[in-house]
Image (cartoon, rainbow, N blue to C red):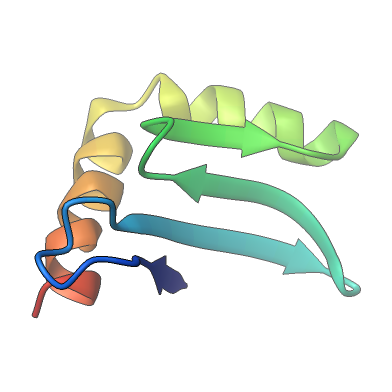
Length: 70
């Protein structure tokens, strides 16, 4: 997981959480997009499942504050 920002008030902060297999990113959650994006065939399936699961999306969105704004 990574946080990117360029201002001191974190108003432009972006949280990225990537899931990889064999050094290839399969799925990535991007807080500016607000959902998971799949980059491989398997990753697209995972992204669709996670985006349709409210509990998973709530956890990813909460991770923005937990991980980046602690």
